[in-house]
Length: 167
Image (cartoon, rainbow, N blue to C red):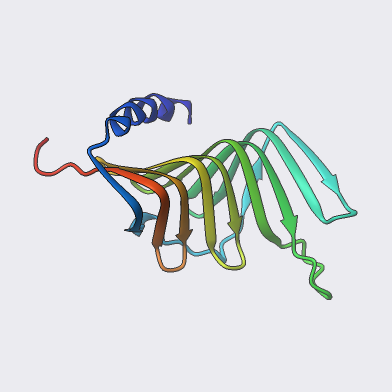
């Protein structure tokens, strides 16, 4: 995942120059359309479980996979379903912080933090969000992705680089 950082920093410098600016944008996320019923796999350097509030805290090189989608971060708090009668240990929500990177197909997004509601299939990324789709890039303060429909919305000073032809 570290090899992705260099292109994103170069991208930030280019985006700062500001080729196109808007206040909000709706984006198709074809590569991020995803089956949220797939199992969630998690790995980290450390795990702390809190039976009292039904959560787990994964820290250090956290990597989460669900089908083809990957999310990495420094720290991820996992909430488990607490509905009465649900004793399956089903993951319902993830809160990721610290260098969050989301990868799926040819699309990649980075942010300071992300919240993934598995029940609704919605990911909310906030804090210096950068999305790349092939050679195109978008940045904003906040991005909301609906994994079921593959549609996302970017809000808060949206900037874009859209490459056409061979340039």
